[in-house]
Image (cartoon, rainbow, N blue to C red; front, top):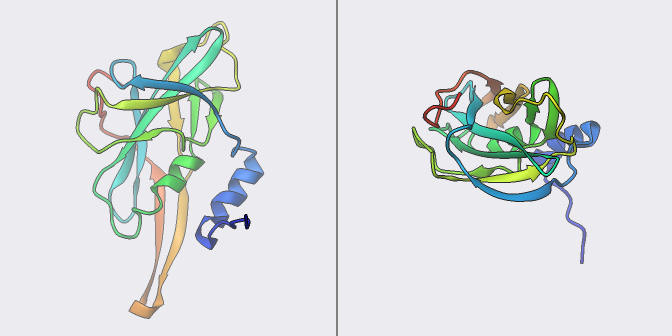
Length: 175
């Protein structure tokens, strides 16, 4: 079977993953139902629209489990194909401790003002549960992500940038 090389558009993400050592597969921990205890994070594109992601962290048998789901609101044609790259570049934290690098495991769900009841995917972090961990301190961090869209055949070149911003909670009672 021939080896498939990544598309040129994915090479910056591949380089980032390799540099950070963050492309390792996460150990699957099943699914969870989005509800109380999930907090909302995300950001916005300079061309309009954004990503809202929810996360919950808890202890299971001494392991640290991270669960999440994400959705996009109205996107421009310039950014809608880049959302998965942003999710893969993001990380889940508990306080100042990074638990998971790369959130591509999370379930994508349709955007709604309330995604309670949606399915979230879960993974086991390589960081064991420690005394003093507070599940309420779970957060997601999104690095600034940018690309240049060259549509010179149409007469323009534009820069598309994603940055972390406050998001309206998409789980009632969540942070």
